[in-house]
Length: 459
Image (tube, rainbow, N blue to C red):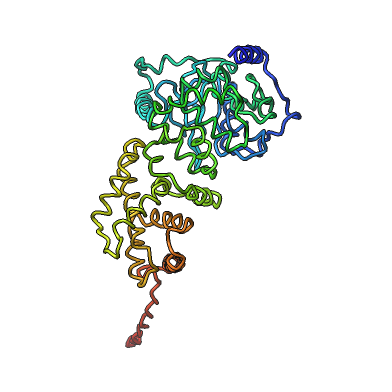
């Protein structure tokens, strides 16, 4: 523990005199940033504010990667940012952030702060979005004091210190294209270490989800977890069950979309976090993690699977166990009983993950549809009937996962793949052909009118 305190003291000195890499000394380039992020940084800078690219984007750019999200920190207050960008909205309950909305991208802008509070999740944003809308509608009214007003704005150094890990505490300054390090993040990037900023145990008790994030970075970046940070995860792992369900759900879905879900799941499970964070799923998902390899493969191909498919993937093996039980000895499947069992299987996770009723409906029907896809389709009408249902895309994703792990016969996979391919071709052909009402009708020839001969006037 003394070594941890000594290390913290050294890093506090670093915060007073940050390490700065000038433009020639690092590989971060605007070419690796989205045009939206550059536009936000420059508009803030040219309006007289400090503007830094922060967090994971700087980390990934320094590693030669391609960030998927770009966050900005500034000394401008939320309302000042809002006035600069009409395409924005203010979110956040304890601490207000600004989301600047571009086509297909959202840039999150935060004011430098000193508060070490845990990050907010999507559930915390709704109230502030409504309040911000009221303020926009009545710009001259005096804002009613709320707990938001207790947020403590700070300096860039304080903002860096309150972040989670050193490798996420780096700033890129658009004013001179330098990289600024207040927390020793550059050294840890070079050493390929994941280390908390501050005392690990205290930081994990403040926000238990940080333990999941530490292991995620270790798995995704292939970094080692620093010893004190790893020991603190062992000490605090039971705290994860106290984390907000909304934030746990958010972390789970982000991981499943990351393309590296199998590695991250292995890290979470190895540290004893997965079964504590998601006991309902862990109780069902025991025997075959290859389903996550299939999910990762889809992400690598650029296929975005629906949330219902991502959750349903954890339940494919339990589903087929129930199916085998109900059809043992050649019995005909009892559809009502099958749906009842699927509902009981999904209910605990649906409650704790706050799944919307529609998402739960898609998972249930998507899994149940697999019972109708055990054999290759015999009639095109069967394929058309299923394809019209709102849950067919979910069922198709689950069918491919089930096939990849050997739960569906090769003949059924080939038959349904051919049927779906033909269905897609027919739809494409139908879209290309003009509808009957849009076709040009041949113009009828007008009958030429015969002119009467003019009568000559009598002389």
